[in-house]
Length: 229
Length: 229
DNA sequence: TCCATACTTCGATGATAGTGGAAATATTTA
DNA sequence: TAAATATTTCCACTATCATCGAAGTATGGA
Image (cartoon, rainbow over all chains, first blue to last red; front, side, top):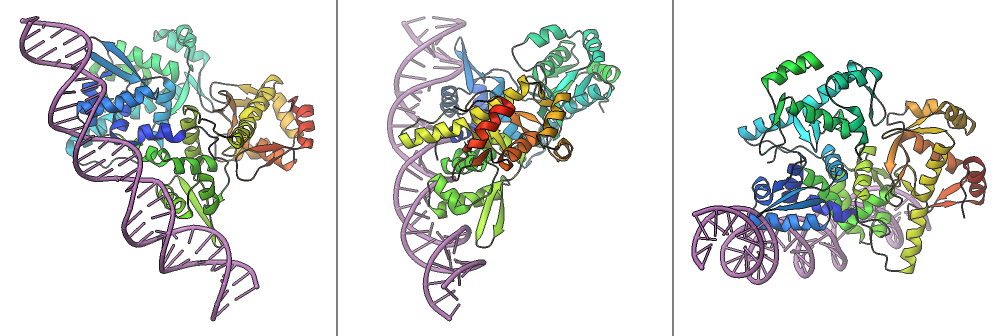
């Protein structure tokens, strides 16, 4: 009974708390220096280095050397998807402190998931796009309607460019905090990039959480009918 | 950095070779008695029992008591999808024996994946359906064309019943041995059930491998233009 | 050249967890 | 009631592996 691939090998990488913390941190899609990841995982640099080497070796994360820093990041979208799929059936962590509670709230409200928007805001935005007929829903993907073509052009997202990317144009990504789908894939990425470019929201340091600016509140309400309390 | 669910907990379940073997065995979608799973995983019954209890406790597999047997199976489709997603990025196991090599061949050729057809045959069949215009391809799912409606009716698969199931109608499932997609979801399941009912193929004991009957060879060629050498 | 920073490798330690023997429990058959 | 089978619980042994101190390598600045 060993004619199967080594699921255990892959899972073992994620099964260790420090490594899981590092991987989940990297789900923000950015590259982080080793020391930062060590801090986030709550271990000494040596330990983090040990884990990082293991994961690079196993081809799940990639390194880039810049000067005396080494930046680590998730290798590709497929790895990110595996992580999110694990998270979708994972039990929640018990909240112990006030600080943790507010961080938790922030992350659940709006965060990046690899390279697109997730959390309550991600789901709400996706639903707004659906309700207004900008995108349509299919089994496992979203499609852009005729109305959507116009919408995205007006919003200055060039669908031609988005479609050309060597990756899935749009797919549904199961949101672990909302247990509903949000927009992922190249289109989800393009939307997030544009929202950041507009300064409607900004990434927060040290977390995957996203902060909505005053402009963002206004813009989201006017353009997407999404109210931020 | 713990405002995230416990990915490690879930992954730890799969990270242990015996448990991974059990879980992959259960991907055939059937329920198996504990002793059989122990044999498949290559451990003593006590050990298997220990692992099974752990996984039941973690809600990834389910038990059914029938007499002095306890039948274990994957809890739901979501868990199966997580497993397959892990398998899709898992490295292959090195083949050590002749027996292993032939088992490997059989499994790669045709197998069940949770409750639908996978392997070379699964992929070929899916492609045949695509080429003949019975199903259409989308980002992450397949759709049934108008021609398909007729085809499935003639093949005595009632799409109305299939669509009613409380699960995804059809989605693409990444085949780890072929690295291409095959038909999954309720439709994939219905197709497999029908093929078994027609006696075109039969499940082999102890593995996820599927054997094609003489009738099957003929039928697959005539109906799907799929040649079995 | 010297020192500080970023990161890795080495080595010892200690905790965790899988393993299977022995025995208990439950169910079926004789 | 006794014996056989299926599975579990208890328990002790062992191996694996994460961890961190210490020391080593590489880069950048003074």
